Image (tube, rainbow, N blue to C red; front, side, top):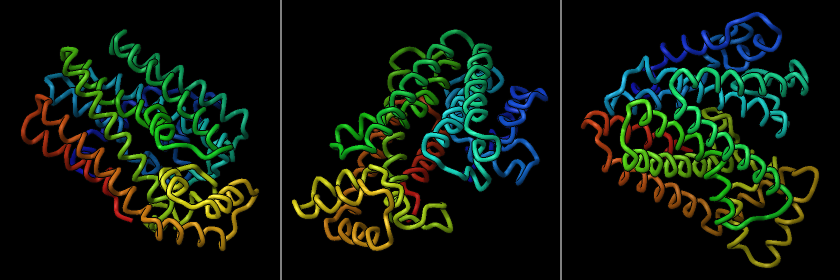
Length: 326
């Protein structure tokens, strides 16, 4: 964990506990889902708290106060949490942060209800930071949901790189853009600075997702929970698949289409796809894409009125997010 993320963990955890008070069945599910309950590994299941930490960091760097920005940060983390509740149901993911997903423990219907409640609590919490904050957060939610819909639609066909990037800018990029811009709003920065913050978030979101997709093919399962070929087994149309399909020959495409249309992907298919991507130079292409978006983020950060130490910390964090080792 970087110092930037560690610095804000205490206030964020306290803010989550305050937002998720109560003893109803759904609120207990929410506390379990975000990692606040003691059912299983307690606070270790909170995750990195990346997005709310970015809100507080940017707000503080640009002249705001942590206490004023905390409702916006908590609102954003709760939005992220509600999206994961619903995503787990839609993607049939049975494990979340090392524990059974909420829908596995309580059923699909209750997991969906819990996600709906978390969304409402998120907006109610963010409202304490002002109407502009809620408007920014709600716009990001709309984009995120559209992105999830596109991602599900892509499961039925192969897509172009432009289509993939458009989906990522919504599903993943929306909340990253929101994190940077919420910090700016809470600090009261002018519109040109907000626009630059949005550029940073967009680039970070693309680089983060492309690197995550990289790990879904060539990841280290012990470190990242993504064994080699894991996204192939799930037939996800990730960035390496987009690049690999575009670069493949007719016969190779035919086999890719047959594999991704099948109900089950066996070990032989996974090995063939990974070998094909290696031969086509997909690994290098993905790394180049990640690097290009990381560079865009750095250039935009140079235009922000951050302190020298703040700039170094932010660049170090982005390097860690987009250069996670295979």
